[in-house]
Image (tube, rainbow over the protein chains, first blue to last red):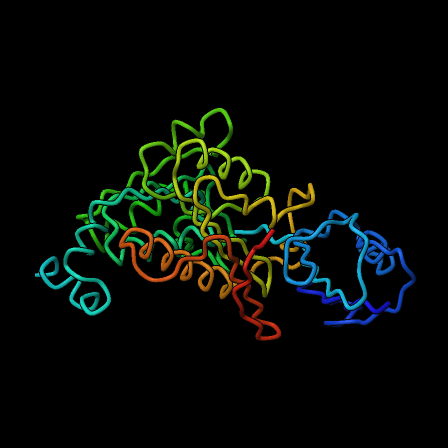
Length: 74
Length: 230
């Protein structure tokens, strides 16, 4: 199945804005972020198809992940 | 004369009744640094009548690249006191209360209660979570803003909303700002959006960012409002 992964802010460094991965079922978001060497602590906002997501949920074909790092300055 | 004409240029956006609502409002800004300086400045200029400015810190040289109230003469002085002096200089009719303290679970309730809105100008995630919890308990809207380098985000959190849980799902205590720092333009931009939210909440007009987050990426020119749907 195909999973589209969109990266934001500093997570674009070395990964670009978007990548499409072909993966075997079952695959979770945790598997995807591990594939891209993103520490779990760096996943502040996780959207799956535009909705608040979950690291453990098995993904479906054509799912779109959006991953944002924490932004905490002021 | 100054008082008579002070709000002339507000008139077509903010009616006389709404201007009076702003004058009666009690808004608390937590943090008087990058976001805080601009938030306090714009809240005071638009006519919010009662502002509490909270910060336990003093200005240092590394603040000069972005913090509105920092200058060579105030290095070493308390940020909250300096903010109060600056506001008083352009609008002595505003009650601005400087509070030299850092907000914590212990002192937070006493510092935040009796305000209509709390404005986030904090520099760390941990205290934001504490303040969001206190705002929920005290039934006070929390206008969230955060920055890191080229990036910023804004949201309006009403009591009971689970917004911060969606924006900070990990346990990270700080964010990309540790790597990127903060330049001069992002705090001004994010604070502008926060003050617009405050004015809209107080005057009950327009669309607010409740259960939504405004993302701003000045590096790649991406700006959009993301609904935070479960």
